[in-house]
Length: 218
Image (cartoon, rainbow, N blue to C red; front, side, top):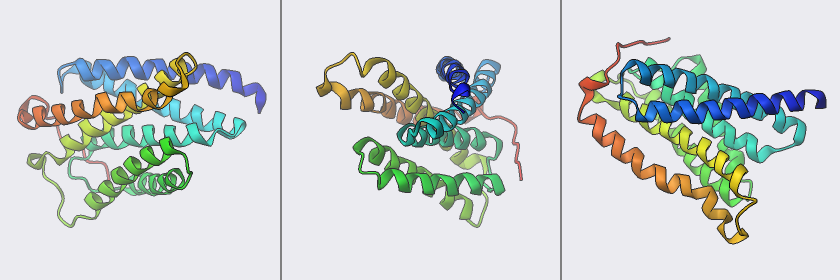
């Protein structure tokens, strides 16, 4: 399978740059408008390609570390995108498969002994448990509850933070002193997390500006 490694790497890099660009466009664009929706869709499919190529290359090169991080990034993207499509937070079979895969992956991350994987694994576990709890709630969530909005913003931003982290680490970690290595890994999270809280609070106060017609997939 080695002959396929170079094409997979090219696709991976192209998808990664696409995700970084369209993700930034979605963040900066007015929420609910065409630019936001279109860039968000392209971002979702770009992240899917990043996850698929990461999984493929990880299996060939035995890079479990990057495989688990790509799983975290894609799950965040999937759950954030799905929140727009399923505002009632009622799970279908694919949602449960994704949650199950997330729980298994975060278990490996937490027990890996690697500090970075442990931190991201704990976050991954909290996200997947939160989703499972929503899915098991007896009464469906309403649009007015804005639970879907919180999930959408937080998860898409978390995915973008993970993507940015991977980009920064790959391109800067070899050029900086070892003492700054851990900072490179967690700087995007330190910067992005306050922004998540800011945007969640901002758009929870202005739901009419970003409400999208309900689309519930079952």
